Length: 308
Ligand code: ADP
Ligand code: MG
Image (cartoon, rainbow, N blue to C red; front, side, top):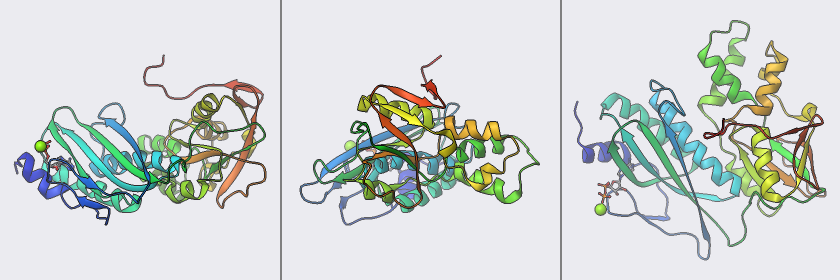
């Protein structure tokens, strides 16, 4: 079936999520969003390009879900309340099956991250997905990468390395991993969960935060640089899931936990007197100085689109 641009928008993207703050959504020249009185906007955007961020034949619902959740994770890292999102979609063709699956992924992520879709853009070209997320917070009451203080505890939510393992195990056929572990690790890559509630809990408590999208060492390096401090990480303290701990190659598992991206957990610093929230682990400390010191080695590595 051949769909025109406006049929396509109307059919797949006109009614995704709702909220009393959305005064005008998809369909007009601009959307209208009313934020809680006196709050500031927190805005972030993420692009996923075919052949760079996902394979051209990746499942459309997975592309959609992961792109929305990656963007939502940036709101989590700021401790923002999710308000709404915009979707800029570039498509080589308007294929109804592809779009139905993609829209299902958008709808599911919209619901899980409480982000109604209020607008966007649809154009023809090489497949690319850009999601812009809007959040809110009281003025000054949000988390940044820049507030870590020497003496703070360095902490992380959940477990690390699962998504990198899940991606690897989607691409190869590894019979040494149990079906249950395989399913868990696959889902950690395919359906990431941004830590929106935790971010809001940490708001006003943590001195700094970042989401782990590029890998623990890389994101810790960003936090250290922006806060003008050093970070020490005790590798034996890094939380590893039961499924990843069972992986037959422990050195590989450890490397995924240190360097693998896409977990969308929160890495944050807490003053020493603050209580560690549930499901979070202290993995190190903030020190005077610079860089990330892990196992006695200074580390600044991770994925860099323009790096060599
Ligand atoms: P304009 O030409 O005035 O910029 P468009 O024709 O591009 O408007 O879009 C019409 C309406 O559909 C707008 O409200 C726009 O925000 C919305 N829209 C377009 N593409 C998408 C999309 N992929 N997802 C959600 N809303 C979209
Ligand atoms: Mg217009």
